[in-house]
Image (cartoon, rainbow, N blue to C red; front, side, top):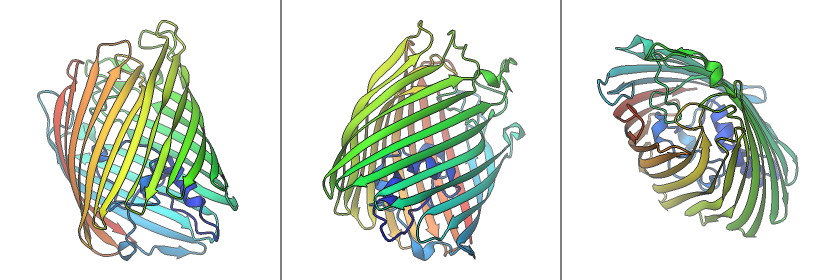
Length: 441
């Protein structure tokens, strides 16, 4: 995560950088010093979640006594990091039957270079990942990520932030947005960029964002032996968002926002449609609050629409909502909750669009000064449009982080996930356990 700069007039820059939390933090190598090991344990991604910056909870709070000093290189600090994971999954293919278990090992070297300037911020990061399965060599993969981001403190109350990244990744088995079962994990390349400008005028603030993403899928072979052309699934998105906020008090603000997104496929024809390309607006209004360091959150309701080029499919519209809440019960205990209802699109499946609803609840506790504990439960429902199919996912997880000293920490994490749906051979149960050892300098 790109932390805020520290200029003399820094009241706006931290909040502006928090706006890009979901995108910029994912572009930086060190997303969070306490980032989860397993993707199932992460809350819904919402760049407007206010709980991560101004009033952090136990897991997102800074612990300077356990933070690596880094290596000073002129006006920059270099932080190298090595993560070693050893784990086990009882269903690596996410199958309903004939499950296959395997031990898993992951080696992830990382490096982050961050400026130490009194104003402005520049950060570059690079990481690589090698994942190995003991019993199924065909599941072995290598990934990488490079990113560059920062913030420009133009003047008092005026901030420009941005980030770009390039990433090679492989699709996760059991991903509900990918119903194609392949013999080997499918690699894809993601290129993304985000830019935002924010202006503060007393109690009134304005923000403009722009973003673009390109997903390039590689070809693969299905379990039935049929070749799956990656060009049929590759697509790009381009979007923008504007937001106006007004502070009724230091602890309470109201806002309204509106945006537009365009999605274009390399090969628009597919899923029985002459064109899956789409455009559509999103509008929201709501309020955010931060009360005495104990409570913070945001609530918004709105409307989203996706117009599919093929008139046979038509448009998809729905009322949307999101809510996030952080309650710091005590200094040592935090409760988090999130709920999101949104319209989504998928390149492969029974439909090209769905309405997704997610509920996530977590508890975090600092048992000792060097020991953090956490647990969470979440549910996610995908209702496919113009289709009787539906997918329900339950996830339950627990984790522990032990700070050995400034340079070393250990983590343990367990996750159970269950998927129930109407699609054939899509239901499964899966248990994953993982131990992680991190060394940072």
